[in-house]
Image (cartoon, rainbow, N blue to C red; front, side, top):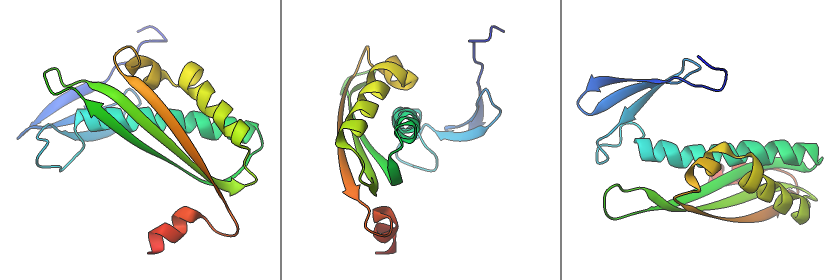
Length: 152
């Protein structure tokens, strides 16, 4: 197999469940019964994949820019067509960065680089879906905003 070729497998497990095995050998349950919600659906995995890809880029770029990030979260929403195939038509990605003196310019540039150059998943979905991004920076006075949210 060529170096830039990837192979995954999907095995039917019965009752609308599948087991996907990634090229790196990790197994993931997939539930195609959207009402049951015992495992992610393929479309949920795509939504998470878009967010995870850009998140990895943002963290890496901000580290290279020596930004003091103490917590980072991506919230993503996707809109789908009503008719079949029910493809995503729009993604809204909201980046929330918590840290000390995080530069708005550095974050905006990191998002732009991820969106336009580095995020392979975004590049894959972009021909059929628009991607809107936004961000907020939360100044970290002592502890993580996300840790305090989890305690509530």
